[in-house]
Length: 184
Image (cartoon, rainbow, N blue to C red; front, top):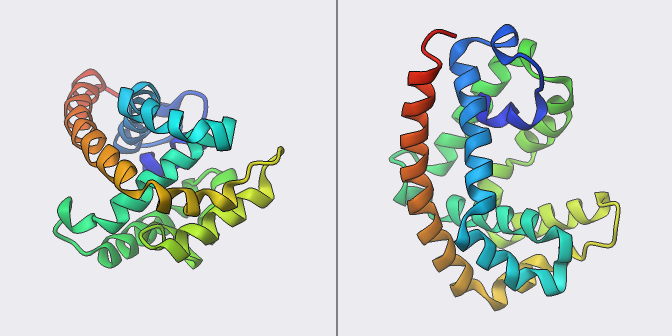
């Protein structure tokens, strides 16, 4: 839960949520910080910047979501379909505590099955096209899937190496957060 709502909550978390959700929020924030500063992520963004400028971070994240969904079986025993349905059910079961700003995107996430749809180019194209309509500035994000196809091997290799680092970081950071927040 905390991973999905981490960008939508502020304030004293331990007064708003149970301990496990707070730990998830804290882990989500650590993962975001780690990802934003990782050399492989920066390398991917540098390739994107000439064409997509300030949107290179968002595009990199979505490319990584694509490769995670596409290669899900390498990381989890559950199928991507089983996993995404489980995630949507868990989130829906926590509706009373979900931040209001999260409810609107979650409705579309579930209905359009974003987590699984990112794994194919059609789903990725739909997502990028939708995002391009909602950006404040001309983003060109609707062209991001075409860019990915031209540089597919680079981005897939980049993701695989980064994700191995992220798995190790996440395990260590989760242990640290649990130890430091044992008395929440």
